[in-house]
Structures are given as C-alpha cells and as structure tokens.
Amino acid sequence: MTGADRDAYIAGVFEHPRRVIPELSTPRIHAEVAFGALADAGLDRSDIDGYLCDGSQNFRPVAFGVLSMAEYLGLECTYLDSTETGGSAPIVQVAHAAAAIAAGKCQAALVTSAGRPRSAPTSFERGSVEGSFEDVWGMSGAVTGYALSAQRHMYEFGTTSAQLAEVKVAASLHAQHNPNAFLRDVVSVEEVLESPMVSSPLHRLDCCVVTDGGGACVVVSGALARQLSRPCVRVLGAGEAVRHSDLGRLSLTSTAAAVSGPAAFAAAGVTPRDIDYVSLYDSFTITVIETIEDLGFCEKGEGGRFVMDGALVAPHGRLPFNTDGGGMCNNHPGNRGGITKIVEAVRQLRSEAFPAVQVPDCEHALVNGTGGNIGTRMASATLVLRRGDA
Image (cartoon, rainbow, N blue to C red):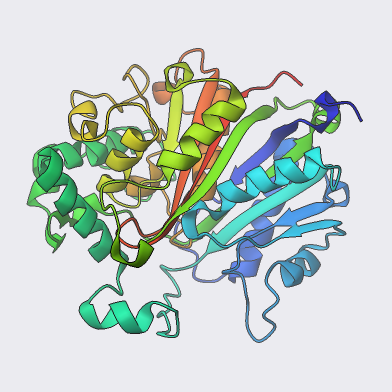
C-alpha cells in the first residue's frame, strides 16, 4: 500500500441514546454501539480485523476482556488492544488503531466503550498499588483529588469558583439542544455556586453526571475510506502521556495534556490557532480549565479568565467545546467519557452536530481525554482530526 493508503480515518461513530439501561448487560451495550458505528460507516462486522476495548471489560467469571468481547461480537481479528488508561482509553485506542493501520496490521478497527454505573454501581476493591496508602486518608473517591487540584489552582493563580462554573454553564447551554442529554436544563453561574458542596471548592454542579451507556467508532485505512460513501474524518495527529505523583513531587495545576497535546499538534502539523472545535474531558470543571492551559490555548494560570464571557459556547465562542453537553450534562458512560468526545468531534467535522451548536466551516477538531485523577496519577490522550480528504 502507498503512504496515503495507510493513513487512518474515522469512518463511523455511534453513541447509545439511553442514559439509564437497567435491563441490558454491559456486553450487550458494547454490541449495540458496535453495530451502530458499523452501520454509520457502511461496514459489516466481517470487514473488521482489529478490535479495541479497555481493560475494564474483564467480565467475570470469564475475565478475558477484549478477547471475550471479540468472541461475543463475532469478530475475526488480527489485531487486539485492551489498553487501560481510564477515561482516556478510547482516545488512546484510536491512536493505536491508526498506528496498527500504518503498520499494516489491520485495515478496519472497531473501538467500543460501555458501562452501567448508574444501574449497577460497583465498589472499588482496595487491592491496588496505591490503595493502602491513599484510601485511609480519604482519597478513594475521584472528587477529592480534583478538589485538591482546584484548591491549588485557586491559590497559585487566583482562579475563582465563578470561573469554574462557566464551564458547567457552557455545557448546559449546549445540552438543551440534545434530546438524549441526561441534564437538559440551562443553569447559571449562581446556580452552580449555590449547589451543595461535594469537596471544597467543588460543588455538585462542578461534577460530571453518572450514566449508563456507551459509544463506538470505526477507524479505517485510507484505502478503505475511499470506498465508503459516508464522510470520513482523518486522524491527523495523536499524542499520549502519563503524569503521576512522582513520589510526592506532583504538580497539582497541570495534566499530562502538557505532553500529549504538543505531540499531537506536531504530528498533525497544526497549532492551537488552527483548531475550530474541542472535545475536552470534563469529569470536573477544573479538568477543563487545566486542560485548556496545558494544550496551549492560553497561558498556564489564565484558564479561569479564558473561559469567561461565553468563550466555550458554540457556535461563535472563541473555543467552542463539548457541543453535546459533555460529561457535565450529556453522558459519562461507565464513568469514562472518552468515547463520547470522539463521537461529537466527528459530528462537528461532518457538520452533523445539532444545528444550534454546529461550528461554521469546522475543519480541525481536537479531542482530549483524561484518565485517572489529576490530583494523583493520570494519563492524557490527544487527537487532532480534520475533515476527510481520503
């Protein structure tokens, strides 16, 4: 194959329309989103020779994760990937699928993500490496680490709770147009600040929703993309990075996007100024503030001021983000929102977003995932996508 044949394109995407799914198993949700994405791409499961899903899919009593899921879906694959980086895993896996296509290991890769934390919540076992050191001090819940980062950001840079609230307000303005969004009511800064405190300084409305559901995407080679009738979106550049506690030498005001972002921009040959739309992981409002800074859309410490005055609101804000409502309001399936970030970015680049929030002439989109906890250890993954030219 030529070099162009080995370029990677996202040919199909699908997000499960439901947010509370008590009667379906998690594997069944994987299957529904998988076949939805295949239908969107105009492909059949017989066309798929690569499959990727994260390590959370270790279904008991048969705990083989991606292998069991490949069998469940009836896939004959020459490439499998079960990378586990939390919420950023689907974004990492799109990059891995692109690399596998470039290496000739597969031609069409399916990425799925699903979960049911709202209908079937599970408790985390205290058998992790860090658990015995952190859980006893109250760090077992995600919000505590993010609250630490928010407190530090406020201390160092003067960021305010009202500035954090602007992230939620923008998400709610977008979610009102999404009939499937879990929360569709528009909220004000004052309503965010008046919501109950969860872990200071983060209020309940600074936190993402908890939903069942899932999503999927199909990544194909340039050679296959040219044979499809649906518009395809090119994976122009990708980067991934880990940032952990470094034995206590942890910066609470930065994320691994400070490394993954520049790598993705360099691979894509574009800069932050070229980006028309961003899908940013929004587990908490502080996640968005720090990510915007680390990706280079503003200087470190300026994120709070950057998001004011409708900067994140589509279609005409200076950095439209999460036009489906994001994890703040729309969907956070399996407590892992990475796949929905990919889906909405593809919708924007295809001009298929909800009309009220469609970014005009959207040519370049950025997707960034945050897995883990920015207050302890986490992994970032960044994709730069472009309207298809297969």
